[in-house]
Image 1: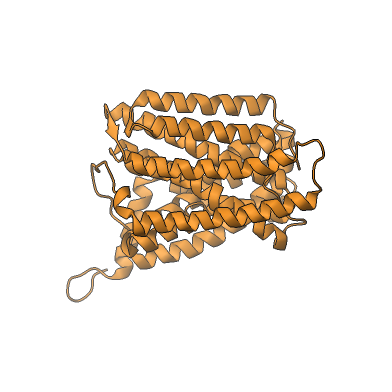
Image 2: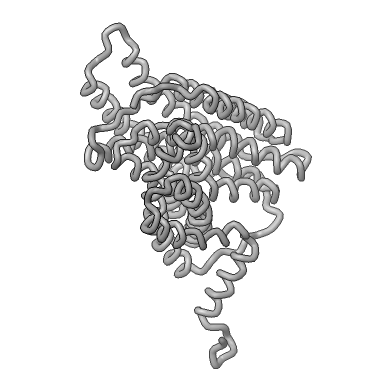
Length: 379
């Protein structure tokens, strides 16, 4: 419908934006599974395996919408506010799933999903971007200063995670209360470092983080009103579906022969990062590898420096008992190796397809090992 002066009405513009997005992003058609899984949760609450699979598929389009709307709002609010918005909402799916598991005391699932998200972003997402971009473009460039900065933040966070795990292995392990106090103090330090890192990269030294690549084409953004409405609505739906996912994952994992550690490390991490992967992979294909590297390493740093410490603090309020930053040795080892590998792969400021193969191979080694011989870690 058009207005009297010949211009399209706002509602018509919003409708066209939605239809265009559905045509160009087929995964959004999975949104029909959201009401289906909510209804099934009330009709067949004991069908945990069915609810598990449908909730996993339902989270994917929600995460895609969340990421797309966040990008649209950030594009209209400037670097500072946009950076804060991306930091807050970029890993919202992972955060909501972890909060649901935290409330029910599934700390192993929470820690596995956090460790898995870090490894998935630094190896699977980064490797996939290198591979897909390299298959279309012979050699791609990106800002290695930004890559080094994010890798350093990630390394700092893995060291902070390593400390509680080390003190638990001494000859006379400290009481649980000591580990909880250490984790709480480290969480405060990590969040402060993350906040100062945002100030450094977005305000005081933002010229160092300018893009080194170029885009093949400019992507149209959604109207601001539509983006904000989608952010609010999708956030509610993600919370509802995540509750169903967490409620069914433990029994479904047993039926499928998987441990909660594997489900958290692989399944939850991949589902939570689905939207960011879509953006990173499409950006690499459009010769915007700089954006892909920033998403992969930046998202991993967000989880390590902000999401994980925040969950430790929140556990004092909503958890059965305070959560610690103590991970099982295998998870700590994988996080450190993934951080070192990502640093080496991104150190030169150039990407090629075989670099992606190496990163994906390392991720496959971790996933296969965890599936065949899942670690027996702290609960």
